[in-house]
Image 1 (cartoon, rainbow, N blue to C red):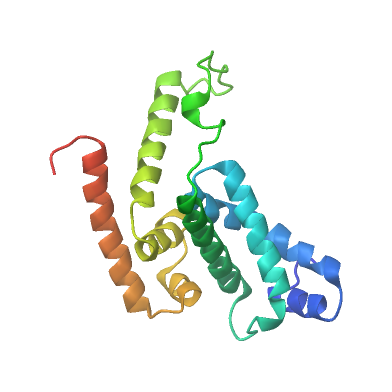
Image 2 (image 1 turned 135 degrees about the vertical axis):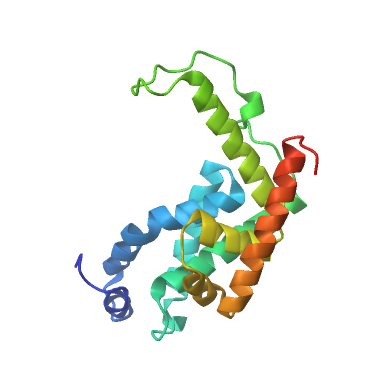
Length: 193
């Protein structure tokens, strides 16, 4: 079962082996969670959106075209689910009590790695927060290519397959997204543009 191709697992599910879908979930849950988290920023929301994406993919499995790769099809569903979630959330703004601004300041846990000091951990955390904020300001098209290519490490060809656009379009969007990110990061960090 471990060495089984995605297509073989899909065929098993379509033949009635419902439990076989868990193989695909195990295979892709971390990657789907990661890509969704790049959109929604909140870990709890990312878990919910990733779960919704798997539910949608299971319910639409009969529409999967076996000529394409399963993970590109699944990524497309996950991205669309994350975008839908963000659109719905924009229409009804609410703050979570889990947001950083509501948490109490306390003692930082002692690091198990002596090479990590609290200042560098805080700096990296702040840089990651700023980067996520900058990525969230990109349009859906640019955010998608930057997340898939630069964050997730997919090739431009894989991104093109997921988005169903030519590779040249992906190259152009990645380039444009990086220019916009540089500009936004400079603005967010207070540097002269």
